[in-house]
Length: 157
Image (cartoon, rainbow, N blue to C red; front, side, top):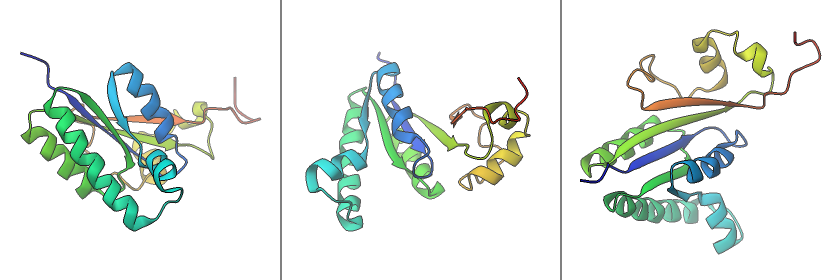
């Protein structure tokens, strides 16, 4: 019997590096990647919200079909809504797939050495208001990626 496919949900604010992470994961996980921004630009030349909603719905439909065929899928949609993430994870489970949520944070005001010294709950609360549960990482189905690690001038070496 084949291993269950994995649905990766890439979560983060605009410009956080979601697509960069999705492209990396596409290779590492041998996954089919759906990034609506790329489709909108190539198909319509603009980012109209109504058209985007239709496109995202169709990409999700294709993603679910791919999961049923045991193909890993990455949805690089942003997923700001916990309800949206929860719904897709529930659907994936119903069709026999696993899911993983990957939170991408772009840390502008801190360098990596300073960020790593902060208690994680302070960092998450200050940087990303997408997290609603202190147990979010308890089951191992979520991960956190910090980008923009350039040190600032006063950073200790």
